[in-house]
Length: 438
Ligand code: GDP
Ligand code: GDP
Image (cartoon, rainbow, N blue to C red; front, side):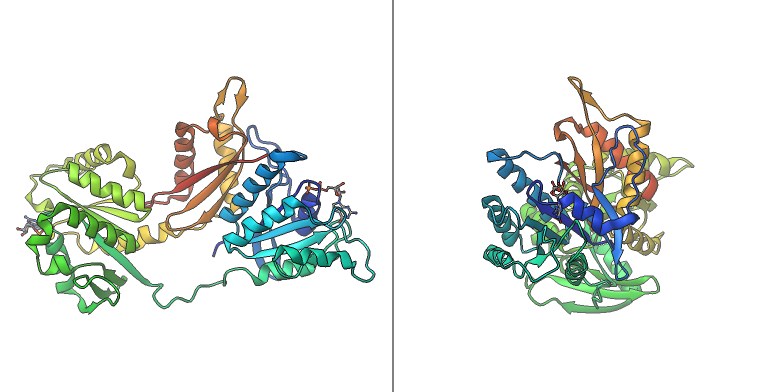
């Protein structure tokens, strides 16, 4: 399970960093400076009542006032909305409610993310200062009084945050059924493969309610797992009419890809990668789905010891955006290696669901930036503060940097490769968002 992320947002000087330090206490380790990486009080992994989570301080070098402050606050809120499971919105009893507090509250409200509203600097332990009631105006529910200085109220805030975390284990009955879309141009062997698989396994064919009339999914189960092959109607009983209309078949494939966990991108061994294959693989890649490249009709190829390696190299060259996908050479006709498909489906599905802790990611980041210095331009060097994973399927990351303009594609690529080198993430695209911080 992932660590839920709690992000603290609020105006400058409300006490974000003081609260951050109070909440993580001594568990926060300040790591020595690695060139290119500043790891000060930006995030920390901690726990409360046995629930681990990552706390993020979205603050940075903050403008003091004016329009600049407002746009800074908006950006900060957006970062929090994008990356956090729970947003801790901190305000200040001494300044009272301000226009920018209202602004931020509105953005947070629209996001529908859980928000915990806290009012800081309520240092006295006596009766609650009635001025706190003003904060009900934000429409974010009960304000929690807190003193970051003394620590009063921090337990209540942590309780509130933890109560809004996603359940520790999602007990989804469908969870263990992997949805598979088989895509490829006409005549590549989709029907043959589906028929081979379904012919050999226990088959239950069912209409899926709510989908197009002719979309039929086929469920089956073997010792490797449970699978739902999506939209097998057109494959099992061929409809030449559908296939002849290219636009329709692309649309149909796109819809199948959309619903899938894993896509099998089928290539004809005799033809190699064609323009249409590139297009289909591109859709799969853009959809963020896990993928296996399946080279079919391998029985028709005359082989020597190097044929498979050469074919794999050709595919890497012709589908350069999908080098993460494993390649399997099969024959739907003879059944060769068709059984291997299931291990691979399971494998890439697991890989695309991988969660990497912020701590581990940043160890890799520190290593990567130490080895290859981030680029600089006109005397300004890219600084990567930290990165955190914000989602799975595909793995999503947010990287916080001093200046996104400096984060060139080549360095992004380098970082992606370093991450893949350590964590694998085979068979899945990854997404990296770059955010300016401070
Ligand atoms: P940030 O800009 O939101 O990160 O705010 P800081 O954590 O840097 O705090 C801003 C100022 O408020 C500092 O001078 C803190 O000492 C002070 N401060 C923060 N929390 C409290 C609090 O609970 N009580 C009091 N009295 N002062 C606080
Ligand atoms: P689809 O249009 O992608 O569903 O492709 P089909 O399954 O209808 O296959 C098209 C043609 O290729 C048919 O004549 C199949 O018999 C043939 N075919 C499919 N798979 C293989 C294979 O692995 N080896 C050989 N030699 N022929 C195959």
